[in-house]
Length: 283
Image 1 (cartoon, one colour):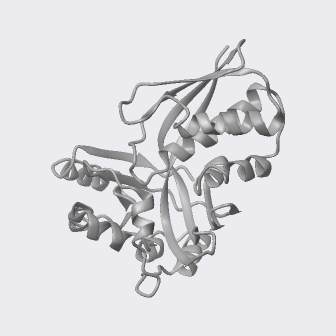
Image 2 (image 1 turned 135 degrees about the vertical axis):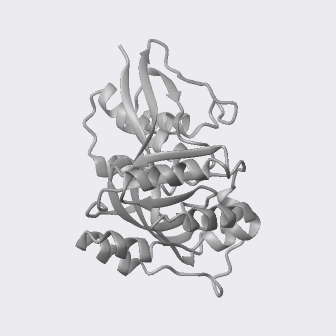
Image 3 (image 1 turned 60 degrees about the vertical axis):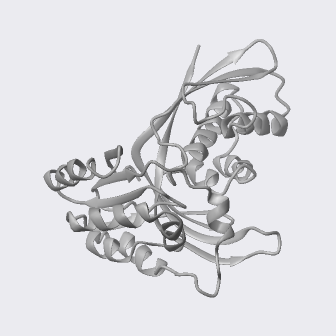
């Protein structure tokens, strides 16, 4: 009998890189929310003590390199599970896009195995385990809307953004998060106004939110891939209220209140890149 977990994508409403730590990682402050674009994770128990991955994507490995595989292995090791599982991943979230596709799959596996093997592990403990896999995994364990601090492991739940449409546009490139972070110059780094983003969420003020969303990594990724800036400019010129690159990119999103306006921008952006999506805020 299969167990199904939904794995929603995320967008960054604010991403601030605060400092580089002695361990080589960076302290960050990230406000994230989930959107209605999801992968589907199907878990089936196996008699043999092994982990199997099946996925129909030439861009995602189906072995121990896959973050979902690593999540299952970490879960089995942590709780001494000597059972097997087959993990079927049905991708809808674009790969290497800044939308947390790998992280949300890993988080869904941790949540799903907790249910499959009836362990009743608290969410906070799952999030701590997820932090060993990647900076976005703890947020993806919880979903909805939250601010992540530290390396990404310290999660505080937030009020959800006002209901709106999200247009996503991903150029035909992949971005290495490691390469982007490796180019950070802390003396010249742009810092978004996270306090104003938090205020906008607390007040339910859509226009204030759109005015203050920001991403420290956007100028860096745009300098490496000018397509990001071009898509951002095009989406803004078409009337999106708030436009920002998510994560380390290259996906750019626009926030819009009115459905007809959102559909018009969606249709217009399809002339700029092949991967364009029109979804709703979930968080």
